Length: 65
Image 1: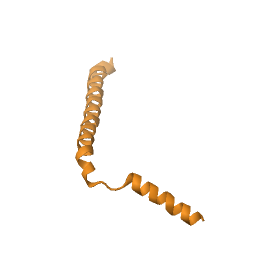
Image 2 (image 1 turned 90 degrees about the vertical axis):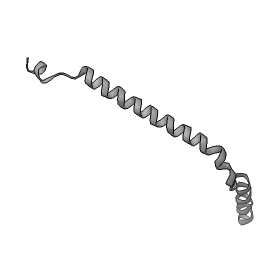
Image 3 (image 1 turned 135 degrees about the horizontal axis):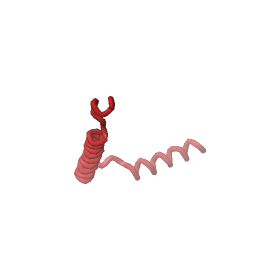
Image 4 (image 1 turned 60 degrees about the vertical axis):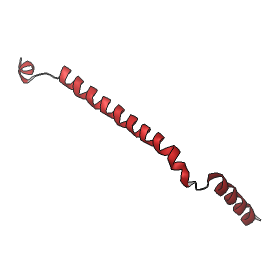
């Protein structure tokens, strides 16, 4: 009984998910745009951190006085 239910559930999910070889044509551009967005945000964070470090860091002569 449980085995037949198990196989029925597996068949339903296999049909619903399925392997669609043409789907990469739709999903690849979205993936590329998302990755570019991630790298841009990381780059902005790095540049902001670098700029804030330059702006607020003390020089060696200022810390001695």
